[in-house]
Length: 197
Image 1: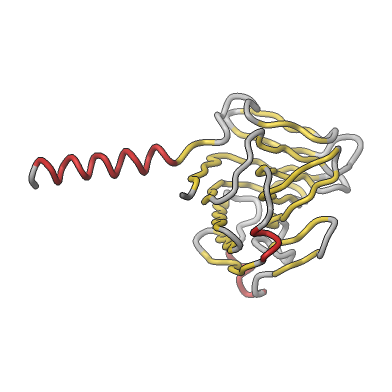
Image 2 (image 1 turned 45 degrees about the horizontal axis):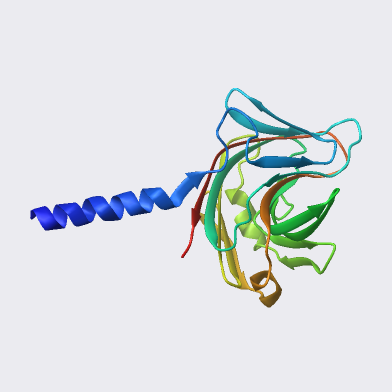
């Protein structure tokens, strides 16, 4: 390998690494804001959401807004495990405007996309893809959002891929959800984002 080629490899590698960043530092909730009274805390390097006494909706949202990106994260559901990952979202109290990539128990459309306080379900994954979910174990979710195209993967299985003009016009944060009803606990880790040019 020539010296020039070697330097190009180093530059490309460095550029790629510089684009990806962690949204969760494993120590505290710096860079995030809690909405609602449900519990969000860090223990043993994990981000944990848990139902509180009000048994209401709760959100943990990034302070920064993200438009086009590839997001990867790991989650492990305990108890009910009904949660989700919102993209291009804004929150007022516990009312969220945006789109949720579903995280739910088996048979409840993990990886599908739901529009809260709007059109409801936009797309659900085919039912046979539900076997990609490992309840009670660590799962890896990837979400790619570019313009009006959204694609989700669960443990390497593509769950949905579609385009939507309204999503394309959206602006806002990435937010994790805890569903209402109580009895929910979800663990999160390795929340990484790569912003797209």
